[in-house]
Length: 111
Length: 114
Image 1: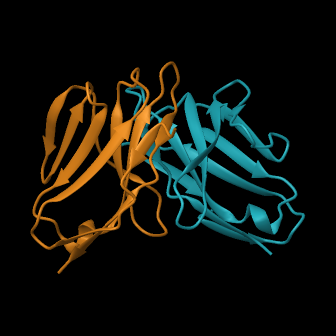
Image 2 (image 1 turned 30 degrees about the vertical axis):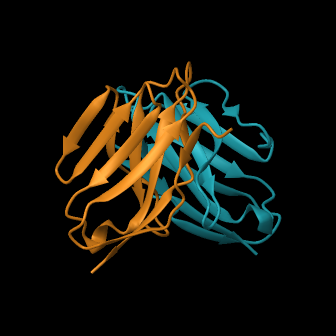
Image 3 (image 1 turned 30 degrees about the horizontal axis):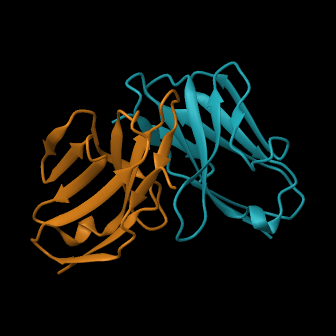
């Protein structure tokens, strides 16, 4: 079983819509979760991190964490073509510094 | 956010040669850095965890004698691919861990072995 699983997509949404990206994790001891965006040919860049149950908002992005369900999501409001990228979900590993990464979800925002 | 640099951004080398990649944290000190490899259309694969002043911890299946890691200072870690072969061609990305346990990635190094 993969430690972090994401819908591989691809996911397509029209410009201005809300894009919803989902992730589940298996390590109940995981405390911190991160969303990275990766453009083709580039390295990942951090969008948001979340530690507590509930929602965390930053501009057009909202991360949601439900530890009981072991579920993390990222909502992108008012999606823009420039949001088109692969989004990686990552969770920390109990007792270690490294992260488990999902395989990523490819998002395309259609103008 | 914290800034991490990598050098070189791309390198082409002949089979059998060694290539060194540098990873630097520019505006913070990082006792821990990570090295990843990413093949086309695949996710990141953690190769090793680099700790300043101690030996790196390699993931299962990663040859420590082939991928030499040195983390001699709090801002610099190096990855040397020894005796590179075409199958080592990949996108190598480092990340550095901040004091708040957040990883920031370098821009990556694209290695092509002919």
